[in-house]
Image (cartoon, helix red, strand yellow):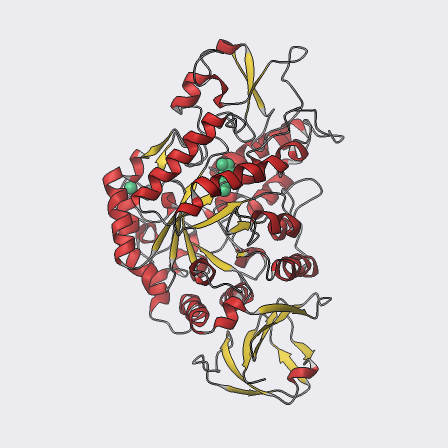
Length: 568
Ligand code: GLC
Ligand code: CA
């Protein structure tokens, strides 16, 4: 396999609003990020993915951009941004900008002009349609509640918004839109950024017939997904971005892509497709979904999770590249979701890190994951901030007859706000995030879970993540080795092997609260290997411990163990 820097990198995502407040206004900011760069360097990551910092009215915390070439006032100035880029590069780190080009804010100049009349240079920058029978052009529902269409009087027409009303979708069929987007991306590349995370990039092409979507019983709107996600034209547009922008710089690109299977992955992230380096699929994040949506309090099934991840690992091997993630600003905290944030908090957080970081692909760490931050549970809907959470509560309780108590249970489990409580730096006021309040919330467990208590502790989750990252740098098998699932039917453990030249790696992870006895695969029986890492205390982690297999091995609750066999 061809070697590339972005295959060997580990990425750390910063959600700036909740990362570090430098000036006491309760909102994280760019100078705050600069203060913490040494921490990230010390953690060992290579790339920082920065969630949007552009000018924005913040209906969706920056994912509604009103000026791509300016910085949100609360976060700082363009001078701060230039300094951030300089400071990142000075430490040998790279910066990946989050860029949202499926939609803008309705406060963007393009939209302000577009909605004025049918015949100005920006009229076709967005998707405008005449209404039907006194209502919107079709029955599509938006992701953030209500119809996907909003009426605009000055044009006597509706515009499409797949997300909030204040996030109108750009019209990618218009070549002038594509030219402007490309120019803007090149402008950032000229500033020195090293890559892009492309927000919902597989939604940019729409079926131009705009037909009604299937409407299930009890659902207030029709399903837009078949007409807006993974339309073949999306590949055409992404190839054009690649040709005119991405291929001109030695950068890394990752596309956020909803509703994608491994088949789609091979197209968007195929080595010979000239589109993106990798994508974020949602398949493994949907394992605990309910019937038609994420709003469910169902527990995940390990066999299902494994089936999905094993499929992506084996299908993409040699033809495309995976991104590896458990967490981001849209997902609940993984230790609460797939681990155990009670008595096995530390051990299960380390196990989850092991299970993910030993796979083939580029691993992503979301702020706080490296210290085992957990979900944060609030009692009332008023305690939540996120536009998705708040609109879903209203739509599902008011229009779909959902029981409000049940909906609150789902929200506690699945709300994006679980990821958005502030970073827990220490056990002082506001968890060390700032010295004067927080824009949203501090998780009350910050006295126990924080960076400063883990920094010097060899046995902490933080120290463990540092080791996981170091191992990836040291052993090419972790980056480039191919992947074989083990015990696929087990609902208690997630095990696999990796192979690379004459080496083999055995990865054993328990997702169970009870002890398991596992039969060792024949090829490893009576063999000697080296333990590269384990989350069980009492064993060294200096990757030299010899390990001799018999026929069976016992896995403690949430145990993880990685063993390397050399000279096969
Ligand atoms: C992506 C972002 C999410 C945002 C949405 C609309 O899914 O990750 O935070 O709300 O796009 O821009
Ligand atoms: Ca601030």
